[in-house]
Amino acid sequence: MRSTAVTVFVAGHNGLVGSAICRKLRSSGVQPVVAERSELDLTRQSAVEAWFEEHSPTEVYLAAARVGGIHANNSSPADFIFENLAIQTNVIHAAWKSGVSKLLFLGSSCIYPKLAPQPMTEDCLLDGKLEPTNEWYAVAKIAGIKMCQAYRRQYGFNAISVMPTNLYGPGDNFDLETSHVLPALIRKFHEAKQSAAASVSVWGTGNPRREFLHVDDLADACVFLMRNYDDEDIINIGWGKDISIGELAALIRDVTEYGGELEFDSSKPDGTPRKLLDTSRINALGWSPGIGLREGIEGTYAWFVDSVDRL
Ligand code: GDP
Image 1 (cartoon, rainbow, N blue to C red):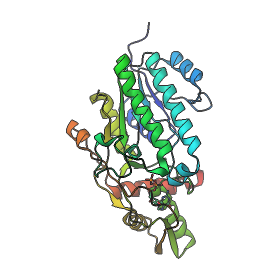
Image 2: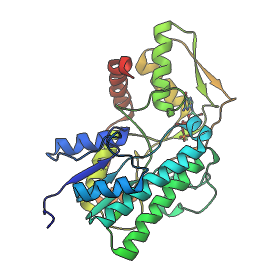
Image 3: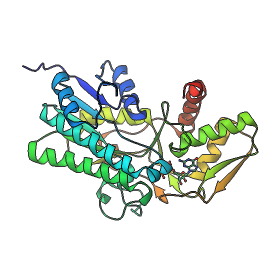
Image 4: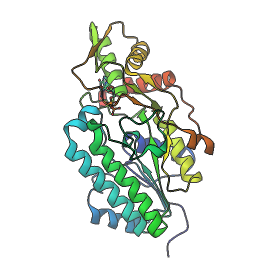
């Protein structure tokens, strides 16, 4: 007989999101179960099913994914679509099959159409064409949402899907080829300051607008929704405001105390013109973010300076 104790599995515990969820759970007295990549390859169905049978988790945060910025998505489309489809299919199916009571699936705001009205409500899913630079990732995430909805309808499986906006924070990927804009600019400004370079290259025109949520706010929202949300409708998790890439670059220049110029490289893609989530649904449930952008960037920069030798 299964025990009635809660066993929480965080899939993807080494990533930006998974590690923040683990921190949040531990701070509230819950010790999550995790699986190292060397012990469990989430793209292998039989291995995932065997792991679930052995460990019998009761709650699952599905934060494992192949993620990356605009360049990585654009240049490795096969990896992005295969790994994400495989990981989420295996974990959702094994979770249902082994009797997990609730699963939270992490999606992304890039599931919404490129030209969706802003701010984007949950209802604009599948209402138009996707942004081509990340459609491989987006299509996989949409399949994950649909899988959660299908398992709820057919089997009564309590799987919910949450859509975070662009995230940042300690533990982010700072590799200039594969990272997202915020960690990339932190690294670029830091290195430019150290080498006293005259300017920093910012990709694109600087005009696209993005919303940035600190990953500790996201983790707080995920734990909140695990407790308070049981519906098939997807739910956005955002910060509520957006800024242009040019403004973001100026803010990071300020935080890193770099004295040189910004140079916009318009040979690099802008990607989608604007990405801001409508967060009325989660706000109405009683959750809102607590970490300001400057404060969040300052903390992330301090973490980067501390960790740069190990990255
Ligand atoms: P996106 O939100 O999926 O488009 O992904 P990114 O975070 O990678 O890029 C957001 C925007 O920032 C795009 O318009 C990029 O061209 C721009 N950007 C400016 N400088 C950089 C950089 O150094 N790295 C990345 N990844 N994006 C940058």
